[in-house]
Amino acid sequence: MTEPDPYADDPFFRRVFDGRWNACIGRQGEEEHYLDGYIEAAIELVDAIIEKKLFAKRDTLVLPILYNARHAMELALKFATDRLVECSVLNNSGIRRDHDIGTYWNRLHEADIGDEKLRTVIAGLKPFVESVSRIDADGQELRYHRNRNNEPSLSKYSVVNLTLIQESLRDLEGLLRDLKHRSVDFVNELATGACTRRCSRSDLLEIARMIPPYKDWSTQAFKDQKEEVKARFQLSSGKLSDAINLIRNNREMSAIVGIESNLLHITDDELIWVVEQWRRIHPCRPERDNGDEDLGMMWSFDKFMEYENKISKIYNDITNEINERLSSDAIADLEVIFYMARDNVFSEYYLQNVKMKQADYANIGGLHEKIRHLLEKTNLLMCLQKGARMLGRSVLAQRLMTI
Image (cartoon, rainbow, N blue to C red):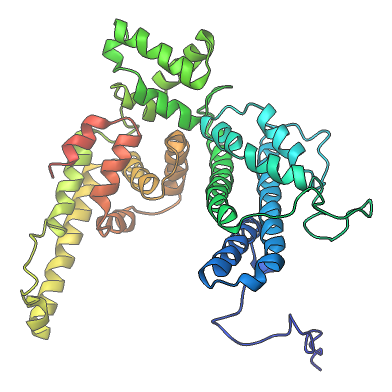
């Protein structure tokens, strides 16, 4: 006997089989939907009032507009706080789960987080947090006509301009989006270990771009640029030295200042040779005029099969050649470089990923299928170029551009 549907008569949650308008909530939802939803609702409402000239609804809809904006700020500040507590950048002692967004903002601001982008975004939120904290410190006044003291809400105010709100909400939306994304990215970067107490991984990459090449580090230009870096990132001489030392010993960062790093197991010439073999299957195709016919559409079945057999033989021949010439470690290296670039994996995980791939290879009988799978990738060259750059092999990346 089937259980009765407990939501059969529910005015909001009964099941409706409508693929267009069913929205994901609960176990199919995401925390980010809350963060995005309230600011989006505020913007949609104010846009609708102004664009449709809904003058009769100004006084009623302005309240949910402002409340949604306030709630969006509260959720974003709590989201960032939670992420930073999880990675021990913030201490969770004394954090109360209340609606005081001023306290949440102050905690983030006073933490003086070691990331330029986060500090900038948090500072940019200050006027918005101060504004809503001034009129609604605890999230009550925009929701109720009377506050907890049974006094009229917003008693010090009489009018508010919707076009001003509309403009400010768009600025606020950008800041909240940046706070959400940068909080997540910052935590992911911390896991790589490529940071100092004052500079995040992103900061260090930017510093590497600001300073002269390594060969010029004994010049006055390097000394001058160090002062600019110290001023921008608020670094002491000691903290700048920490940053520069890390840059010099990091594959991706050191490449920016002209220090080359060797790949773990595959040589430049071996990788170039693999790409040259790949080119036999994926030749450069000249651009065609739009009016040209696709000659493949005119092929007979027999001609098509002849072509397929030819390509299959080339695949088999090249696969065998690579398997004979390259060691299993070199093939593991090649595969890791490709997937790290394709999937935007941090370069700091290169050694770890190669070791994992070597262990994986040790448990399989042969590498022909792995090699064939790589040869089938139409983006192999592009990803190997990108991978070579991010792993500190800029000279190799330049050579690959000519194939």
